[in-house]
Amino acid sequence: MIAVAGLVPVGAGLAGALGGIDGGANGQLRYLSGLLLGIGLTFWWAIPTLERRGAVIRALAIIVVTGGLARLAGAFTEPAFDTDAVFPLTMELCVTPAIAFWRERVQRRVEAAALALRAPEPDQALAIAAAI
Image (cartoon, rainbow, N blue to C red; front, side, top):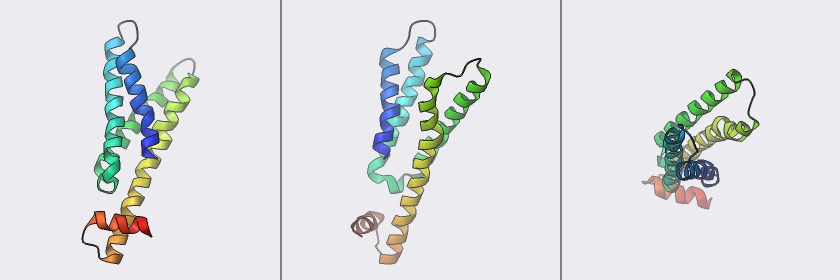
């Protein structure tokens, strides 16, 4: 789920960082696209050890939701709402928080499996929980 959702920030970040736009905003767009790329790559980096990356996922989710709230505020202050913003807003304000909450649930299940099976290492508990 995270790998698929990560396609959005990585793809958009690469497109903006490599393509840019014409005019004075080009440097700013490239910078922000680089940040977006970094967010998506960090989400991907966390996948193999997801159950131990709570702080990382929570921090990324807060960053993304904050950006989404800023985008949403702009929708109320601009004269015309850009319908192209619907998909990014959905990713920023719905999908990303859902992923963060899901990750917390995964961690709780791994910890519960470790307790129940008295497995000494979380990796062993994860393997046991996946096999159940």
